[in-house]
Amino acid sequence: MANYNPNSTNYVHSAEPNTENLVKAMDYNSAGQPIVRTSGDTFSWAINISAGSVNGTSYIEKFGMNTDVDANKETIWDGGGIYTYIATAETVTITSTSGSDSAAGTGARTVEVQGLNSSYEVVTETLTVGGAGGSTEFLRVFRAIVITAGTDGVNVGTVSVTSNSTATVLAQIGVDGTGSNAAGRGQTFMTLYTIPAGKTGYLTQWTVGSGKQILMQLLSFSQEIPL
Image (cartoon, rainbow, N blue to C red; front, side, top):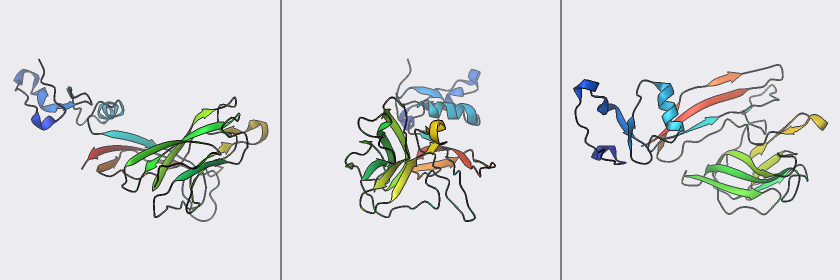
């Protein structure tokens, strides 16, 4: 019977030359059970991480676009222009350019904000659009997503995550198209991310493209491992 232990330093593998010592390539999942560490096979290793099967690791895929890049440099995010980072962690409020995005509206009702606190630890908070400010302080915001919505199923107007002290827009959920063709994105398209405390990030894929609308996208894959 296997000796389950979430700490690989305390697990002693027996030698097995008939399998070319496969046991030396064993790792542990979140339940502390041994799994094969697919070193050298990037795809399989990534699958194990994304499935939550590799203890102490996680991944994130960041994607974004800026549909109106002018003559000067701009950050690839929904708000356009150069993104502004805040210097001190603040609570945030969710607002929208449309009255349909509200607690009982047909559009976005609640939005989850994802980011880091002042200690660079991952924090999340779900807030009502147009409601009171939250209680969680964010130093970084790297994603916002519509959690609940009315009959429209998504945001109707541009939804903003704004810091309460400095009134800095930290994230936006945009809308594509106009009039009857308009459709809310439902989540941010921002290629901004800060590695959490105690983690090391590895960028494994980076793709940038442009189109006739000066559309730019960035796709990245980050694997986090404790320091």
